[in-house]
Image (cartoon, rainbow, N blue to C red; front, top):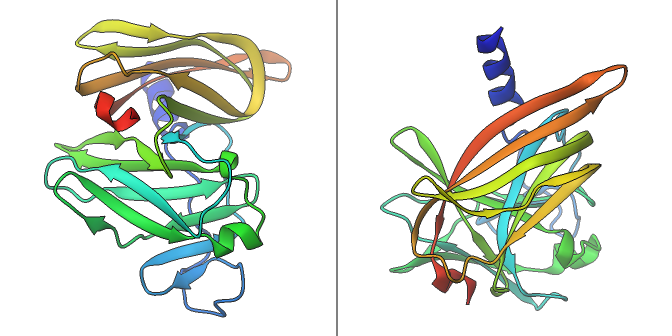
Length: 235
């Protein structure tokens, strides 16, 4: 039973908002998801978010409206090029398969915002994940959308109402931040953390979630995520 619970947890917590359409060329004036300018796949498409609880975003943002070019900035970590996905569940918007520009300390992508504007995607609805694989472990890197805001947003999506009795950020085995949510809600659940006074390094995000089920006790999920932090990324 314990093994079955673990496998179920790992499956449900996997990032499941995957494309259901191939990224092919098309009419560039359309907002449909397609290959654009041979450096990205972008547009509107129907996707399956999943029935469980999913981590969908770790970002810092400081925009209220779109410039002509929206800069996405991802820290460089080792020799790996991160996989990056930007989305808005509100509008079924997806940006992925990016050709990132590399510098000594960061990767960047200057995104033309015509599709975001045509599809009326709110800047506040944008979610992003960037990840690298190190020794078979997924490490998340915070994405700066536009400019830094002085805090990180951690966003989970829950298909059913859920409580988060445990939300902890851990450094070297010590809890440096906790913010439980005991009021059940569905959809996107946003946690903020100002890590500007915490040192550079690897952090662990530990959550326990209890998702409601009709006529049955809540389903419990527990998971640890690992992410890199540098207080300079919040400035």
